[in-house]
Length: 414
Image (cartoon, rainbow, N blue to C red):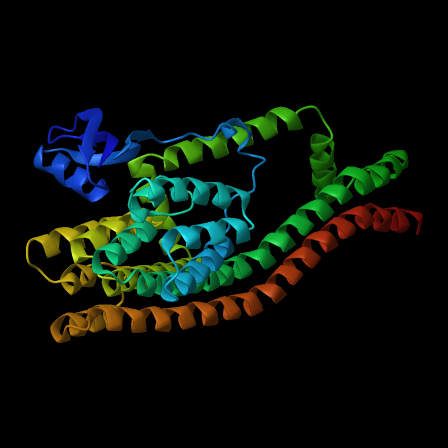
């Protein structure tokens, strides 16, 4: 048993907070739901064992979290694969955790494993101990391990988890690859333009001032921009720009702001299509993996909703969950969404009718992984010449602006 601290909203929209004792997060949410409360946040405070209550320890170096090396996805992939291999080989749990503590490179993950080993020694289930460290083991991970413990197939579940994390790692790498090139070119362009406006153009400006003639409008505009960049006014301008970004971030944290911006992101040209395909691939892969691991569909949908990175997708999953609870079909609500294309809806419907939903979801995920790969490759090949032309055009425009007055002086001499 564990004690959870909750923040929930009742039917009147009022928020309430308190503590509740339950076996796990799912039981705690179910108990609160029976009380008419919709959970906003749920955090574990302590775990009750035979030896008594074990409080959740906070990191003493929390103030230095900026300098700590975070747990990388590749660390979790390696950990899951090693964990699965040793459990499959029949090695005892405590021995497995001891070996992993010695072999894990990530210091933070190693500290988590030490506490997990202590919990397991005191009789705490592995899944409940993992739930104490959401920065390493998210709800998806905990739910699958819990299902593996209940069904006695922990080795198979861990193998599925390792495969799932490897697939997610490849997908993340593809998306990051798509963003690396344009980000690099934009940064280089900004540095080049800043250098020319700050150091080169002022030198020409001094020469132009000695001619006494009127400068071309384009040249004068660039000189004005150069003077502004080098003036004290650039500091308040930068602060206003920073305040605007922080305001957008704060708005994004609200329910309406997050939904609005996520909707715009999905509708964005070029990138919106890739993000939609990534969302479909991630949803089907996660959902299928959970069902294959023996997690109930309602619980699986709850986990998938929490792990979704888009508010629009979360709303769709929530509707699917309600439809399923009322005895409806998953494909019904998916078909009403703009995120999921007809092909996905039809394959899910076939999976529901044939009883092979997890197989269909896996095929959809494989298909969209390939689609994302092709889209990223096409985007990279398309953006490369565009950025080269844009960068060359900006630099060329500045050079032309610097030489226009020289052409005017030559005309006057002639």
